[in-house]
Image (cartoon, rainbow, N blue to C red; front, top):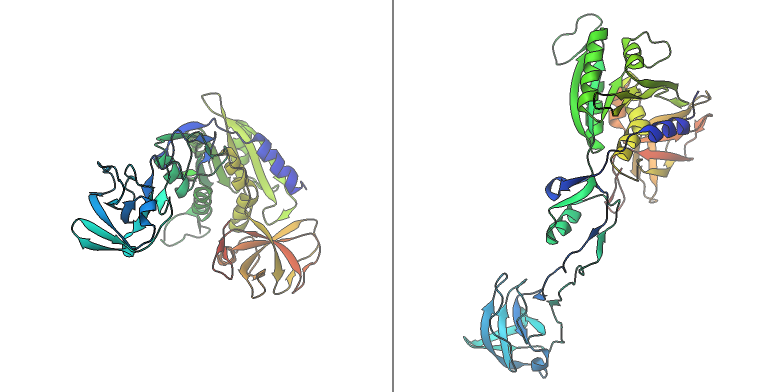
Length: 416
């Protein structure tokens, strides 16, 4: 059997990395920057007030309360027209530019109107009070985001504040998913003898989308050379990667193997893990001379999902420029026995993880551990990593791969 680390290395070493492209900021959420972003201008571009109130000369508030003459009212987007001199103030609203001569703002709650032309300032304030200087957030020429940053909503807001319309980033991969087999059907109609409903395709489409990819449904290909060749061929021409499930076990007699061996350079592996022991990966050339990675996942639904988590997701994220390829791996406490038998493999048990009163992550079995038992996989939010041996006894420590968010006692999620 092939060690999991060797299988991952084989896949990651051969996974194509498309060249970065210019992406509109409006479409860049979740993408990875291919080059650093530098501020071309200060943010904010001018000194402005952080409060509704009165722009004043701080020296004029000494010995407050004091009375000042009101010059004008300044709203955001409308610079003042008069300089503030001794004994004067201008009414100002949050975000408005500071008028010439003023060096502080007194919040409106600490003032009272004497008449239409005069205001009573109740407190003494220092220079700079409630004033946001130009460049208070970002200085012109400063490196705002480093290469490799993953763009969040806040990143996009900063980019817009700088006037950036596009960034150079690693684009989303387009991933096609195909299911093969005469036994597969879709929908809720009655099943004929020997038929099963196709779950793998929808599951893999969803997992690829969760990984940040654009997805293409290549449908179900029937068990003919022509149908399988057509489905995979369409995927290779239109997509950056193609995912298939089934037909990768050593004992399988399946046209998928025949077709893929003819179309590209495939490697069929038996990995030292359970579930998801069988796996295939290779590159299939397309008409423009480039090659597209094709992943062959096991047919059992749980095996397909575990295989994607351990091999498919890291490779797709690497192809999109991510440096953090894997789900979080944490040390947890087993609240019940997580038993297994020695067989030379690492087992990935489906478990439910949550924080205990001790502040540590605790896990318990999600149910049936068969590779066909998708219900237990749906009930789980983590995979317990059980090294070869007898497993972990209740109360023992176990490494856990978090595939969904787990909330801390403070309510904060540890997100995968």
